[in-house]
Structures are given as structure tokens and as C-alpha cells.
Image (tube, rainbow, N blue to C red; front, side, top):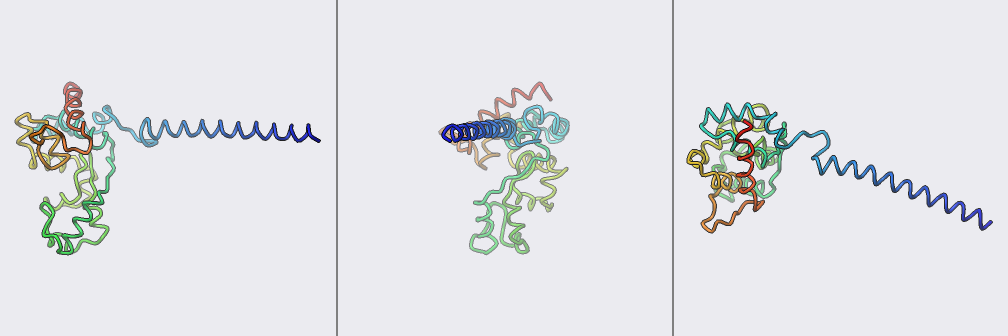
Length: 218
């Protein structure tokens, strides 16, 4: 009786070990695809920037007199070169836009209460979401009287570059890329202290390094 029990326990232990090993293999494969190489089925990275947007950046760079390597570096920082680029909802921006809509806050950047008169909750969420290869905030569409879809579909690259040109193109044409990257990420120039206020403290440093990489690739 004892030997039979021990044999049963032994087989059960072997089965558990096998299942654990199988689970580990499956998890490792999932982790590798989902975290090491990005979400399953997604193509992203430096080569993706070139393949997905290289021609557009060269053409738009020429049209707006902006170095295409800057656009490529910014795209890599903001969306990893993914196409479609995906989106990022900003809860704090939604809260501020909602206050503007309610008339509690006079305005948020260029957005005034009148601009949000007919905006429902879903529309406010879309306006508080960043879209496209440069992750342009949805409410920027109000500057150009365009739709949110224009910031996330085929025209997203054009409108993104147009906004970049108008918002801080003068820094780009002076070759002041430190301030340009900082402005894009924070809305402000680099502090006099030289300490970056970007979400990623190395955002500007990474951007400058990426420009060097893309310069001879476009």
C-alpha cells in the first residue's frame, strides 16, 4: 500500500514539474515577444521609422525646412516608428479640458469653453489623447479645424509636422535641437539650470543621439 502511494505521489510530482516547465516555456516566449520585442505582431524600432515614415519625413522636411533626421528621431522617441502609431490617453489633460467645458477654467492652452460646447465625454477623451507618429495631443486639431481622425490616420504625419513647424520651427532652423526636443515633450524650453523637465530625464539626450543615427539613413 505504501509503495503504491509513494509511486502515485511520484507520478503526480513529475506531472506537476512537467506542467511548470511547460508554463515557464510559454511565459518566456510570451515575455520575449511582448516585452523584449514589443507587442506581438508589432513592427517598431529604428528601421521601422525609416520603412514606415522615411519618405514622408524627407518630403515634409523639405517642404517645411526641417531636418528629416529630427523628425525621425522624434518619431522614434514618441511612437517607436509604429504604423499605425497608436495612442496615449492623458487623464490629467482630460480633467483640465473638462473644467474648461464646464466654464470653471477659462481655457487650456488655446482651447476655450466655446470650442468644447458640443463635445461629449468621448470627444473630450479623444481630445485628451495623443495620436500619430509624434503623439500630437488631440486638442491640437482645434487649431486647424480638422478631425481627430486626421491626427491618427494617413494625414497624421503632415499635420504633425505642420504643428511642429508652427510651434517651434524657429528653434529647428537655428539648429537648437535641445530646446526643440524639450519643447515637444513639455511645452517649454530647456530650463536655465540645464536640468531636463521631460518625463524621461534622458529624452533630449536620446533624441540628439538618434539624430546622429538617422542623419545618413534618410
